[in-house]
Length: 506
Image (cartoon, rainbow, N blue to C red; front, side, top):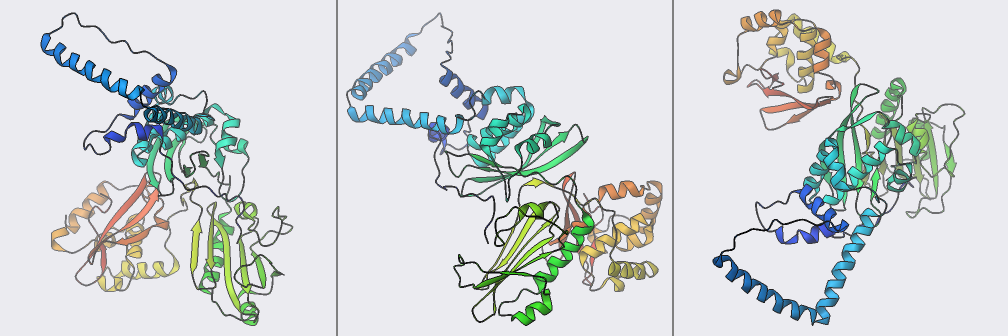
């Protein structure tokens, strides 16, 4: 399928002046130049700054003799250097390369000095140092600081030049408004994931003075083409219809489970329905002769800006006016050749494509605000039945064949219900891991009883947690909330039942 808003970038890598300048240090273990010093020195050299050197009053002969030899040697080498046309040409090439590098990275950043920015803003300093260290080059750190500075100063021209979007174009003013109340001095980099093609996925957070809350976000810094440094930053919708999103999720799972090549038209209608639009696409390279387009969970009278049915309507997916766009490609003998599905969850576009050779391609939008599930903690229907059975008889026999994630949820529910007998029965019984008795547990639980609000706050995001098994007997539930990535540790008892570790959040 064709993706609107995508762009193709040259993946050639260019060494910056900073990299060439620091090349002799690459193989010197333990010698890491201070990034701020390098930028300050570079800034001073560029601006023609002079550094005064204090003269010493006393000279000693042991110093003067080797110094004189060094001056003589330097004079000989200089004469040889100046007399060589090849060396002169090399010098000019280095100078031109430096000017080219400066032109590529600094032309649109004219008036922004990285040293002054990181010296005057602690958030910028943290961004620059962390990104530079993670990527191995100051270029990404510098460009990201310039981007944040432009946002802070509402430099619309700069943002227009450097910013591209995933899937469809946002309004630059919309981006500036999003960051309008950001406190840029609070910027923190949580992680940097770099690819071999010069792209870095940066996860960061900042305090929003208007929302009085910490915002977590991801963006892409693209340095795959040194002449066109770009930032991919995505602004999430202001509101999300979670009721509609739940329907989209169920429907997407249904379509996913029924993807099958070779289906007939009759079979497809039985499974997917007859509410489709048929069209042909002469650009198909795999022999597809026609397509069926389903637009599911779509609002009535929805208008689209895309020029034809073969293009994904990212804007209407983003604003939830269309829940799912689903294509079926047909061969000359009227058999399914391929399928494509695009849908939006939590403001992010997801795609799944089944190609004619059976290959499945999955993708999801990487950038944008990290929206957490803040819905109240609640067991599903099957878990509720199993949990109530366990509460009546807190025996491990009622936990056999129950997934570790569900057992972890039983533990939280027991704490919410203040059923500390059931909660203790969910702890591991392995002797070397038991930390206190049931009597002690009941005494401490009643003494330091927490409110439901506090418990839910600790386990915010647990609804979307996933179980990660480390080995045959150890694992943990991984989940995300405003405090970052969290882990809830568990152990498999000798009877094969997963149980909760004592102090699982430590």
